[in-house]
Image 1 (cartoon, rainbow, N blue to C red):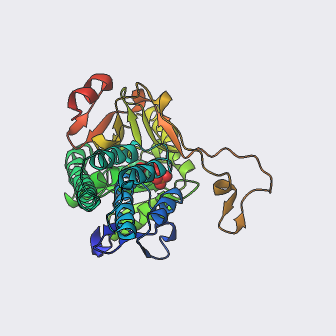
Image 2 (image 1 turned 90 degrees about the vertical axis):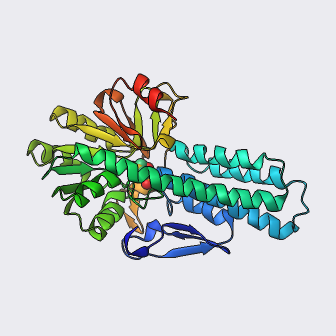
Image 3 (image 1 turned 180 degrees about the vertical axis):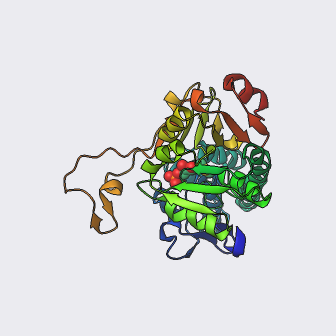
Length: 348
Ligand code: MRU
């Protein structure tokens, strides 16, 4: 990310990450040697965004290996089973983004190797760093492919945060915006605030400003009117899981944005790496949707936004049906319908 703020970084001694719950007020790095701190950080969205939680879990497993190695000095018959339990704990943090399970599967493969605890720890670290570096490359490719779909001078709307704060590189949908901006396309971004946790307002606006991309913050409910006014030519968001038929789960509100885009004849794109594609699920109906505490919609910090005892329903994600998605920008190019065929044919 610009200005040298690391979002997540494994050093020889610790794991450091940016606490995203404190943005935009302050950029605070948390430093830990305890994998339980990372478990909690993922649950609390201090670290969030589909690819980034996969990377964070991989680093979390690595520091768990380091912890165990320093406690036992390497004489440890249960090293592998203990680390598999740690993988299970990371898998239980957030259910929707498949990147988490994809990264943990890579870590589990390493854990299964017949190696000493010292060797395994070295290999786990190497794998976690590879997952991180690999995502940065995918982000770059998504940006380059996706810039093609952004017309010069366009207003572009996005939802949630899909930038460096959500990935190991420049982002997914955000990388497309960044590349179009770098190419001098003179774009203007409209960022949905993204109720209830305000990833659009707090995080995307922060990243847009740091990259000097002209941008306007809107409430989620302003999006349809903006489209009607002709101020938006393209809508693009990231995704947390894409089923084999192209149905895509992303932050709650994305589905409504896609419906509004279709109504106004505006192309709606998803940008995501193949680590977000889950071919084991035939449609979006089987994507597990995380439900968050009702307090996230009834309170902002200490301020009550609703009467005590209000009934709530707080899904963190929704599924946009494939028929509303104009194209999926991946690191291997832009995929168009019929997704059941095109996703499978390009899947690595
Ligand atoms: O709950 P969050 O903040 O983790 O949700 C993040 C999103 O919905 C992003 O749009 C998604 O991860 C894709 S962008 C990398």
